[in-house]
Length: 113
Image 1 (cartoon, rainbow, N blue to C red):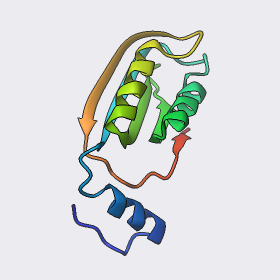
Image 2 (image 1 turned 180 degrees about the vertical axis):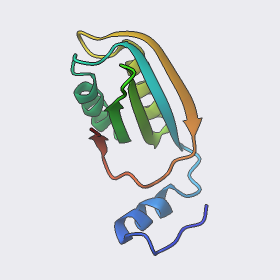
Image 3 (image 1 turned 90 degrees about the horizontal axis):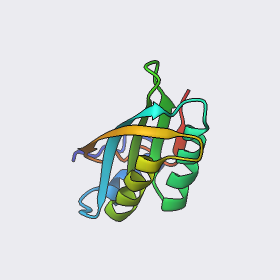
Image 4 (image 1 turned 45 degrees about the vertical axis):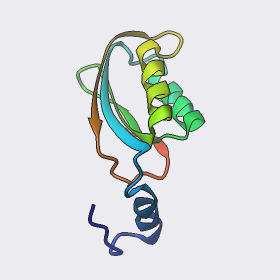
């Protein structure tokens, strides 16, 4: 992974911390079902923060929810398990997740609008 100090210093430091770590991973997921209008994004943010995961969650126009998550592989596995169930009030029909290389550009788990 090429790393440039041209990026902001905190992000460069985070990328350096992630580079070469085999216990670190990422995934992109799209969650379908009754997942909008039930607080899914807020609960996902809370769970991600509890697990030490960074990334984002956002609603899609299709009625699905999209997530990007980076963290330790154990934390990601726990988060993926949580996504299958979702928060109270949600009905998760399907979680389509794809493993990705960590981007190393996230400092927190945010709700994107």
